[in-house]
Length: 571
Image 1: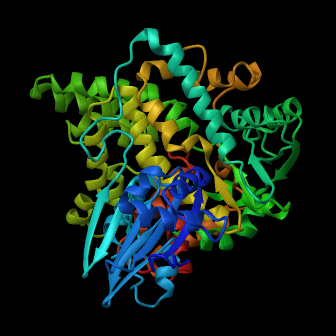
Image 2: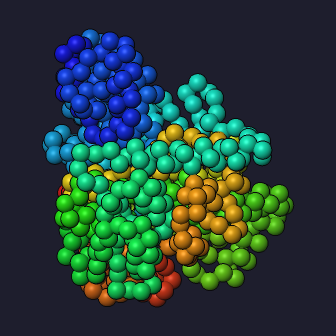
Image 3: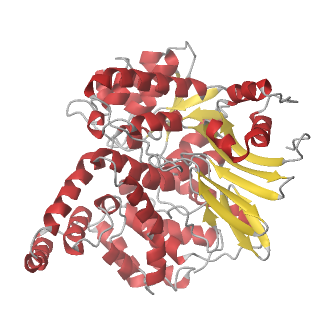
């Protein structure tokens, strides 16, 4: 769209939920509008405030504005990183897009694997912003804008969960007497965010797993008297099915409920299309692919997800485990050096060879060399495993792969242990895996996915609260549960925590086994032959069948190989 008043042009992906409020402000300052779209509001806001327009917005977006008067390009990404924005300079061109596949499709971007992106992938199951799997392509980080002018690039942070560009901090230390008032304000902000994101010209559905996060969305929306459509994935494998919980919520709040039965045969048939839909290789995302496909088939074009609840409201086991690991590291550092090596070796000898014990051994043997216990907790392959998998170790790529991790860690240092884990979960696992996969897999079916629990104003309020307010021995996510004012049944609040995952542990031993086996056997003849050691890959596959490692490790290698094949990417 072009603004005739300024000559500026915009291309834009996303939704600005408070655009009507911003529009009223602009109209009071003399702006006139030709449409009812949020796109025009963005153009006018930039024309009025320039880069500062970003401070007025609540939403998810990746945008580019050509400033006609200043002859410069302005790129920006939303504060939480819900929408992706890729860019790179190639053959005298500056390219940007919402998908890496679009950049590859220009023919200007070499289809070469970035060694640092590979190091990230093997470590965490996905590359870490701003690094990608494609050499020369970067991701604009959340809460940043980028200016291209006269051939020069300048990247600037305009918002963060902790730091502000002016040097101020997001968090403060409220007095205990203020807790009731702050919790009430938080509850009001949660409700405001959920209702704000229901504004749409088309029917809106809700992904309902039966957990606290998605059930909270349904509970809040039920107060408005809306007739909701909810969608859940169910499995034949009883250990993974959450049908009883999603049905309970659907009955309580009277939703029109849809159950999507997903079998391993369905996954097998959809594998090529699902992997092709991945903008970058990832070990996650298939659950969203299936629920998005069936939601769209039911005529729904916009859906709400409870994504972000675990990261911001402290729902993971990491919120208790990582602070304990931090204390262990502090204790370990005070031991005499003469004791550390023999103790670490004895610990390694005593531990059985499991994924969890490998991480504990790595923590003991690292002697302070691990960036932070959080990264170890989220690790797919330990450094020793990763080094054995890579045929040619690249020290420079490994160092580059850790730059953003170190930056995130540095920003979180001043926080208390619980809020530090929340920051790292939000800027690492959630950003690089959950949000990226949810966007790619939902957009593959033309479904717009909205995440009300990731409103950045809500995040600000949460990070302004002490971490110990977010943990309770008797109630998970107490701040979110309190915001629902008793609407959620006890069966939902106190159910056993279970991730929104497919039963790959079973499926890789059954119908998917031959497909994965065939792909991993061909590593030596495929696009990754020069960077992955075929013998080590085979060892990971065998370890899975012996019960010595989880499904996620051979699956990660399978996905990486297939993704490179489908997108003609080579090392």
